[in-house]
Length: 306
Ligand SMILES: C[S@@+](CC[C@H](N)C(=O)[O-])C[C@H]1O[C@@H](n2cnc3c(N)ncnc32)[C@H](O)[C@@H]1O
Ligand code: SF4
Ligand code: SF4
Image 1 (cartoon, rainbow, N blue to C red):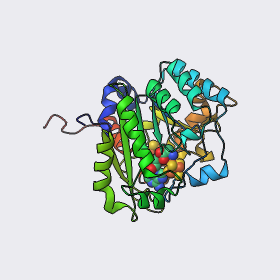
Image 2: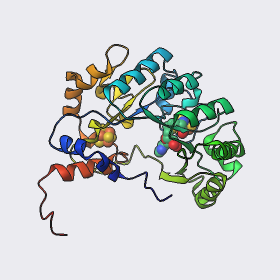
Image 3: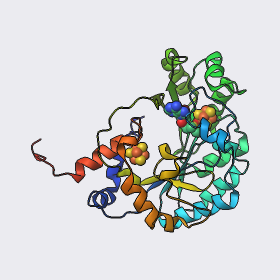
């Protein structure tokens, strides 16, 4: 795939917003991660969301999901990504939620283990989303069972990739991801070939997030939180997916306040002003964006010496 989808350069597509943020002005956020379910049909050996899922194994109420979609749409947010905490397909009303997204201006993507797919859900995804990314992480049945610890055979997930590849509209992208772990790392190359042969356009290879490892981040302030945020199944809003469940960094509760009030309100200003980068994880998925925003925020020495 020629197009780069995992790059911080993406932000340059909305340079007007970048300019506002680096001069400390307010913008309309671009993208939100939404966790519609805290439940999961798998039990991955590395699951970063295990605590959140088991502490509060709920699905978002359909009425709240509809309201969130309406509010983000009206506020001018452009995209939403259905992902954790948990497995989006565990929400029994996922098709209704997708239909609601389709009736809005929002564009959507889905990150899933794919285990609960059926033809109706798959068709609704292709009808309302721009992409699906299957988290697979293995190239052999035995390894898949060991790391995902589920009843779904790997072959059935590969069968769904083939289904999407046969049925999808031209602009729909099928992605896969592979999380490297001591139990599966030897299969990354062969698995990537298997995923691509089934019809995936790309494989996102990552390493397991290590909560214990503390490495300094190469920026002093989180600016990407102006562009994005995370909403959890209980209706809470956070500055990013890594902060889900951290009550001191919760920006507000959509059961009690509108999205607009949360986004423009004093609580958000206070939380962001107190946000201490030293407490952020070294695997912050937005580090590249924050580094770029910091560079643009500072006095730029020798910037015309190329
Ligand atoms: C938490 S899951 C939620 C969506 C869905 N259940 C899935 O697995 O695709 C979202 C992504 O986080 C990744 N993930 C889970 N635990 C992780 C960890 N400890 N380190 C890095 N990525 C992790 C998964 O591999 C998956 O691609
Ligand atoms: S499928 Fe996703 S939410 Fe479920 S256990 Fe695996 S990583 Fe966690
Ligand atoms: S983890 Fe990253 S995105 Fe989240 S608040 Fe910290 S710096 Fe910002």
